[in-house]
Figure (tube, rainbow, N blue to C red):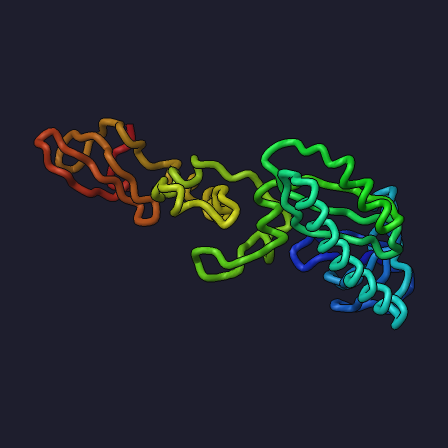
Length: 265
């Protein structure tokens, strides 16, 4: 058996499992952990639990220690370096007239690599920019192009609901969202109504989609001819939340019926 603990590296990030060994850890503690990219500081997001070794991933990494004052100073120095690198990179992008927008800079804890996240409409030849960055910071440089949804996640902001965007708070994964989800919920297909700050469909369209699908499963579909208590008619609208369908009868009258009152055929 091993002691396993969940660690987050960012507030909106995933929770990763690490071997806690015999360290006295609790939720909210700052720790230094071993990762594929070297040491990193994270926050304990899940309390310690035990698990059989055979159920754990083969590449399970260790919690190295609780953070020290030196670790916190290193993190603060890295943040200052990230700010400096951001300003330098923005100037170089402007000077070289590159069609890209710098979004974020990330410096690994041990400063062995710096990652520059940028957005662009198409592929960008940034080889000369990389040379500038290597010459200035004397470390490994990675430029990583991200999409509009990832950009909104990093920049953050308020959605039309008045709350901070979900991608920057409660979502661990940016799952696929489609127009079909909006249609299933009888929402307006006006792009301004169903698009988020990123210009893509709002993530929250997927929250209740499965529930609407379940509610509609046993309801007569739009366009279907059905027998109602007032005669035959064609379904023109559904109200999944109320469990009702609107039918235009052969007489031309519109009538609303509970789906459960429609005889099964």
